[in-house]
Image 1 (tube, rainbow, N blue to C red):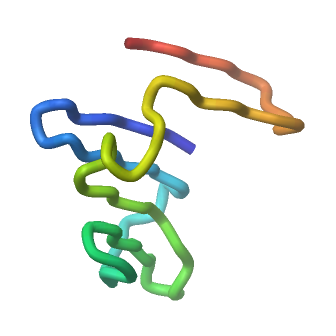
Image 2: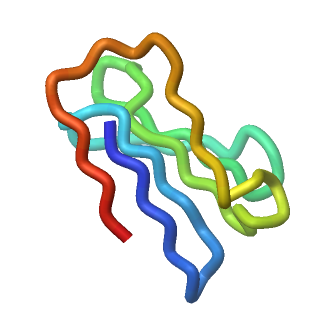
Length: 72
């Protein structure tokens, strides 16, 4: 999973899969879900992210991972 924030557009993209998205659906104003050809969720696009969530804190809990990369 990759999370990218774009301050120039105040948008965030949460990339959930390596697969290419072929379909997108807006499920709420400014929230778009991307799906692969099998209908699996591949990503989440959030417009006006700073108005919808606290961008200053990310909490990961009980997530097993082999690699941790934090970059600003």
